[in-house]
Length: 414
Ligand code: NAD
Ligand code: MG
Image (tube, rainbow, N blue to C red; front, side, top):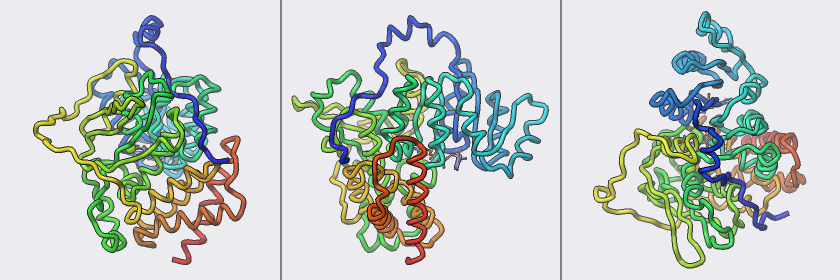
């Protein structure tokens, strides 16, 4: 089934007064951070450390850096610290000895950390590895501050259904989606003409196709505006990230795929533009610092301070926009096609892209091979009948696994 129908607005819309009278902000927010040692995780904890009285840290998780995880858990007074890689458990346990902080390890423990009672879970694990823990967070019924876009890309319908079932609040952390969330607040879906996400264009924005084809991992890892983890930085350079974000937006906002678009905006000041049927265009602006959208997700419906640079438009003087070039950035074309195809195509896209990005960073393939490998994997999955409707997370994870097998097989031909 192609995903062309409008979907209901799934983001929370409770009025401010109702929340205030419920007294929800009178005690500290119990917060867990999945992926605490990463770029989003440390930015979240940076905000927490500036107003510690607002938060009570429940669980922190990381994959392999036990030393840093233990230090964060001690600094923020967490109750639980979980390391994904079981071989690092002894290191974590020893570092937390006599602190009273519980230590655990392994994939199951990551999911249990997400199930610890909390008012908000920051879901900031990178990649499809974040799916199970983020689904667990969603099942709790509290707030899910969603940085792990893969959850919506790979498992969009299944994830939004899980959110609806539990009554959880889903708040986007991705800057463009946070921008759209702020701009759309209360909008009548019928009045929306277009939601346009901006893309910085990445380090290769003005490069020729031949130069892009020869790009090295070091060049691709130099993002002009944002400081982020390695995976998303490569996705930003290929524009795959914008393709993933269009799919993410489709599941978050009440519009059909035809009403979603993107535009290159090298300064990364405007994060999203929403045009309405009457010709009005509303946009959100902020300096490129993830602490702004993280603060929005933590404090909504209120606002909290974030120590970001203040926007100085007179100093910036010029904001520019240009159309994305799918000839030089084929990953965007491939992602858009997967979005239109719907069903499990985005899950295959995401898994194949994770394999391809790793292969590029390991210098096994060239930069433009990333999009080619993903497209070939999508075609192979379609031939095998693996692009189909999914009804639960296990279906999605099976398709994810198959896509990884297919793309790894294809990798050997490169
Ligand atoms: P990162 O690589 O900096 O950090 C990832 C975190 O996840 C780390 O704490 C790491 O220990 C943990 N992790 C890695 N592999 C894991 C695994 N297999 N199991 C469990 N934990 C694992 O990534 P990031 O840049 O912070 O991105 C996190 C998520 O947020 C991604 O989904 C990304 O797309 C999204 N996001 C990031 C930014 C940004 O500015 N960094 C912006 C928008 C969205
Ligand atoms: Mg983004």
